[in-house]
Length: 459
Ligand code: ARG
Image 1 (tube, protein in one colour):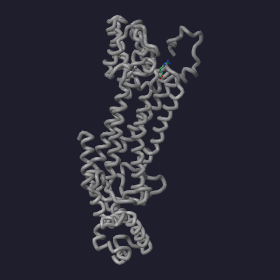
Image 2 (cartoon, helix red, strand yellow):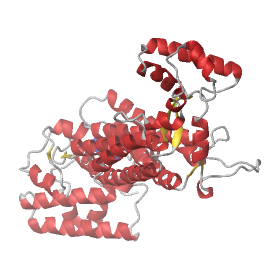
Image 3 (cartoon, rainbow, N blue to C red):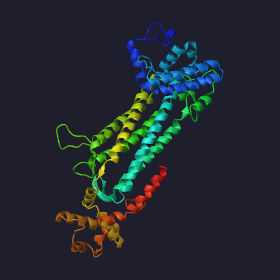
Image 4 (cartoon, rainbow, N blue to C red):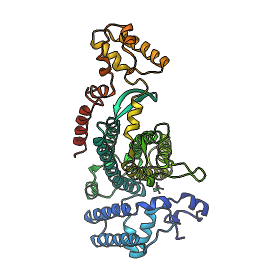
């Protein structure tokens, strides 16, 4: 291994176990592009401000570009024994340029360097995740458009409650994903401030131009406080929160898909390409994708707890604990991308078994509220109507019939307000069609929210 940069201060070599323990290149190596991007901006500023000779600055920039091209092409491999990506690239630059390379780290510390790198890296990741969640929202929205007339049971406590349409159910997720998109945007906006120039913690005595590096890197503005600049990881927490919510939505959706493809429900059939078989039970077709998404949600939530716990006791400014931020947030980012990418085609190829949904909605006294509402519309107070309907349901259960097939005498025996038109009022189609309050499941009401969602998604 090459001599440590700080060898001058030490009389002994650092123990190998400590070197291995300290090293973060195995997981921060993925930020090499962003590290070089930050260094190019820094070198440009150093040259423009006359802090280093302009020729040196230009040579450094060319050197950095060469390193970038070589890592990209695979001709330069990251040295796993380097302490981190920052040290590796600086050492490589010095190897290539000699003394000129040694000027790059003027007026900079790894503390502001790593803070800028993570922001640049995550900014790109947010763009990717945003595009994926947008695609997911559009996929679900397009499915909803095809199912405005598909009646299914709506549940509370996982008990059949009132009828809805599949489009209505799907649109609930579209709105969750739209909020996820807003949260990603919001996180990106707050994250987009530049810590470069904060130095180790207390700025620098050189006459730097922080506005210039901030502008060159596309940030909104330099961070106003150097201590905050190097010790803030709120953006990692915030992003992880947004990611945890994306996973929570995906996980709830997954749980429903898992139930829907069970024999007990049979509302959907997964495409063979998105299901798996069993090694022993020949009849099995398992929803592994959705189960794994549900499982990985715990993992992404774990990343959030890692970040919050890592930060909670840290005095200002930089502490080595902060190196733990990357594995957590990278893991969250990687897994969310993986899950959304797999979920989209699984959903798009899933067959919807409309008849089974409708049959399920026709059972379970899903129209009991509508029966009570029928009496209310004839002038009875709701509580009385509720009680009468409850009694009728109990009679139906006892006689093994439904409200639709209960004879008129039984209705009349409860109150004269009941007439033949009750059968029409409690028919499944009426129950769905008439639920046209704003945000409700009727085909007409759902078409309105589909338009609202299209507008929100800029379609
Ligand atoms: N690898 C370090 C990290 O990820 C870089 C910053 C090191 N700074 C320091 N003062 N040791 O946090």
